[in-house]
Every structure is written in C-alpha cells, then in structure tokens.
Image 1 (tube, rainbow, N blue to C red):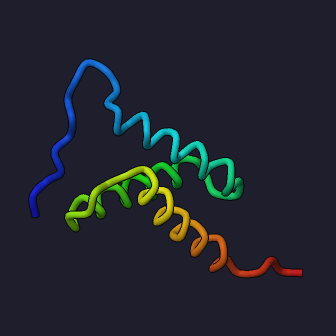
Image 2: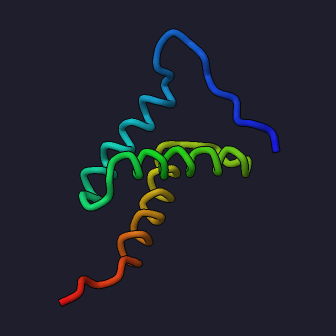
Length: 81
C-alpha cells in the first residue's frame, strides 16, 4: 500500500487551517472525547474521502466525522449504578 504524501512547506496549509476549524467545532460539541481523538478522526475522514476520490471539503469532513463521533458516544456502555 502506498504511503500518504505529506505536504512540506514553510507554513500551515489552507487545508490544515480548515481542518483546525472543523476540529475546534467538533471539540466544542463532543466534550467527553479527547481533542486528540477528534483530531485523528478528522484526519482519517479527510484521508478516506480523498482516497475514495471525493472532493474533500470542510463540510463533508465535518459531517462524516460527526457521524463517527456520535457513533462512538452512543455506543458507550451505560454507567454502572
């Protein structure tokens, strides 16, 4: 399997800035999930969408990542009492 190419440049790319905004919005919505996990989810969704040949827009990435995070939150077992 080929490795994903990483962008090498002097400053942050526009994609990274948009991804940061998506991560910030999702982190404010999913307080029980660590930001590092949200970051990984957004990065994975972005890579998967690009791999499938979809246009990687912040709206699509946010929508799909939100569904993944909702699944994670809703699949947690209830607390023991």
